[in-house]
View 1 (cartoon, rainbow, N blue to C red):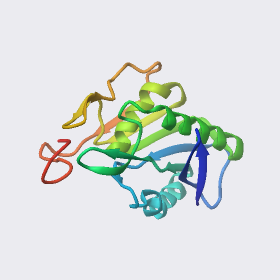
View 2: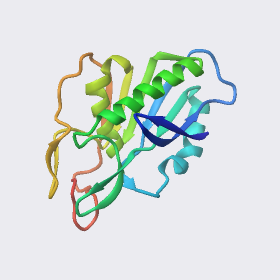
View 3: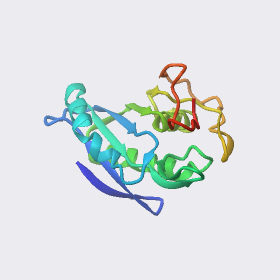
Length: 186
């Protein structure tokens, strides 16, 4: 279910789901939501879907909520530490991984990340900073080395991870952009 979790002095919502019949040595998947408006409740909105995935794949899925950050011209958004402020989110990952290891019967050698958009960008940061903790990374519309008009960049400057990790990368079409009307990312 969903609970509050304090890490690095910041309290956040976190969903932790697992099968109705948990088995020893389950894999762990960290699901990082995309950039979204504050108040959109991405964790609550995904709970049914990630519970179904946990059942089908006999896994533990952990889905934390990003911190609220004010972005010029856009306003307050839930965004991961991809704008050079990653330490609190890396600490959150470390704390949640430690908690899962001590409270659930999981296999940390089978720990992976999954993210879409801003969550995929954060999965790139995780790959670069926590490769020794990851078995695999899955990204949908992520990347690295991006700039934001009016804010600067490049952000999330790519560096080779300490350890090679299998990565599945997928993206949308060449005409995809966000937000509509005044694209910041394309």
